[in-house]
Length: 330
Image (cartoon, rainbow, N blue to C red; front, top):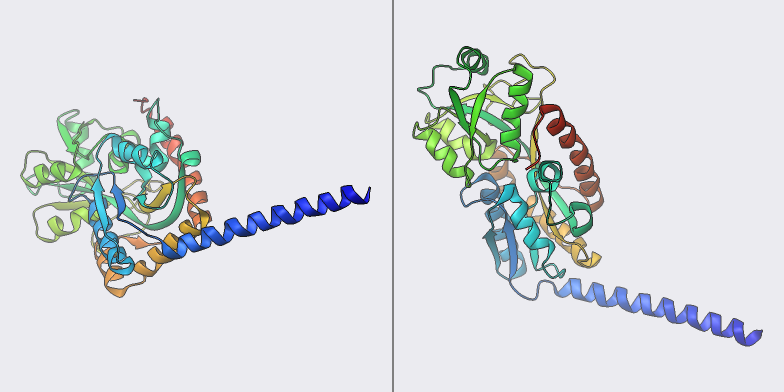
C-alpha cells in the first residue's frame, strides 16, 4: 500500500517537473524569438489598405526585433488563399497573417469548401483596429450623394456598375447589403486586386467604387473621387463632412471592416503572448498611431482571448447578413 502511494506521489512529481520544464523551455524560446526572418502575410494586393497597414507594422517589428519581417502579398479568394498558407505553416511564430474580416469571419459562410477552419487552425494574436468602408464615385457620375445614387439606380436598373475587389470582401458585401435594403440593381465588377478597381474608378472606367476607408482618403482629398457615404454608425474623423449610410435614409445600416494579427494554431502560448505585447508596443508609437488614424483606422488592440471572441461573434453576424442578402455560396 505504502509503495503504491509512493509511486503515485513520484509520478505526480514527475508530471509537475515535466510541465515546469516545458513552460521554462517555452518561455526561453519566447525570449529568443524571433530567431530568423518572419513572414508577415497580407492576403491582399500591394497598395491596398491591408498592405499599407501591414508594411507599417512589419517595418516597426523589424526595427524592434533586429530580424527582418517581410511582407508577403498572397492574393486570392478574398484572403482565403493567404490564410490557408499560414494555417499550414510551422507553428513557431515565424509565419503570421494580417487576418481580416473577409477571411476570418465572412468566408466561412460564403464558400462551400474552406481549406482551413478559422477556429481550429488559426490562433489569434491581437486585433489592430476597425475601419468603415466607403461608397465613392467618379466626379463625372450623375449623382453627388448616396441618396441621389440610389434614385439614379432605381431609374436605371442594371446600368450602374461598381468595383470592390474580390467577391466576399466586406466592401462588396457593404454594397450588396445596401442593394438589398434599397431594392436597387447595381452590377459588381470584381477585381483580383482591389487597388486596380479603385484606380479604374479614378480613371473613369467605372462610376462607383467600394473600398476600405484607408485606401480612399488620398483620392477623395485630392478631388479625384467623390465620397458619398461611410458604412460605420458614426461619421469618420478623417471625413467629417461625409454622411453615414444611416444618415442617408437607412438607420439600421452599419458595416465595419477590421484588421488583426493571427498565427498558425499550435504556436506556443509564450510566443503568442510576446507577439501580442510587441505588436501592442508598435501600436503605441505616436507616429504609427497618427498614420493609422490618418488612414481612417480606429485602433483597437486586444488580448488574444478578446480577439478570439470578437471573431466568433463576427462569424455569426456575417452569416446572417449573407443569408438575409440571399448571397449564394461560391
